[in-house]
Image (tube, rainbow, N blue to C red; front, side, top):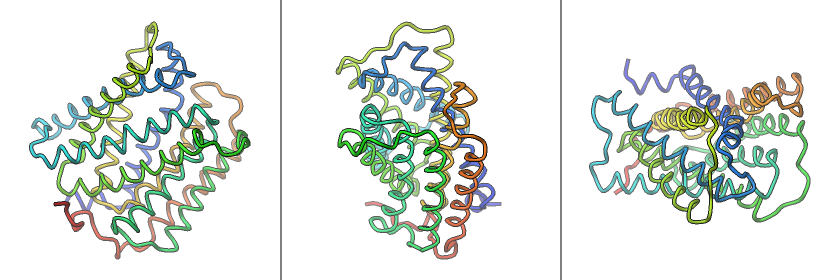
Length: 322
């Protein structure tokens, strides 16, 4: 069976996408554990950016190593076009998105951050439909996004923290972060028609991580004394980004943006459940709320994936950039 046809099957897409979201969901508690292990002052945005840069820089080399072994050749850019693609992806996926996200999160609550971050699914759909014309807008897609977002709202409302109004440096930066994520998703889909998505993923993380390390250090960021398991935690956080983003890019290559990004609603659900398990957090929603949220997210995913399958153009028919 052709690789592309296999990766468009709903069960395979769902299995891989949920695996990615479970990895990203585990990042929520593991990043908190990593801050403690590396003595990162979470009140210092430069220190947080420095730590994130270390994670992404490592993730890039891990993705390239794994991808090179799988492809039995070195995944190195061999064209100016590829370097341009890497630069654009690095700007939107890593540098802009995470600079805006971490600064915004420092000025608002984690609950608001999770909810606003989930709005990236809507942003990705709108950018793919109206700016890049990669797919068509349909009522079922929009309804699916709304239902999935309701599930994210439900699981976060149980933790409180939605008050306090709207702060440009807080909620405003988080919204801009979701827009950056949306552009990175549609760019990755477009560029994957010409370049290996794993190559793009790896090199954009290397470039973006290096920029964040330099910026965090220049702004006074620091990481402190290491706990015994700190290197292993950093390695795991790097693996999360390397594996999940590379697989996500492969799915985007063969599927419409909305059909893949709608699974992002699963990430905060996994994040809440894994935070409760790993961090022993007591303010997480009870089982009934989590179950209801999961049902809403699953219904939303089903609605989007059932919308207009025959009409959506496959990735290899997208107009290539000059």
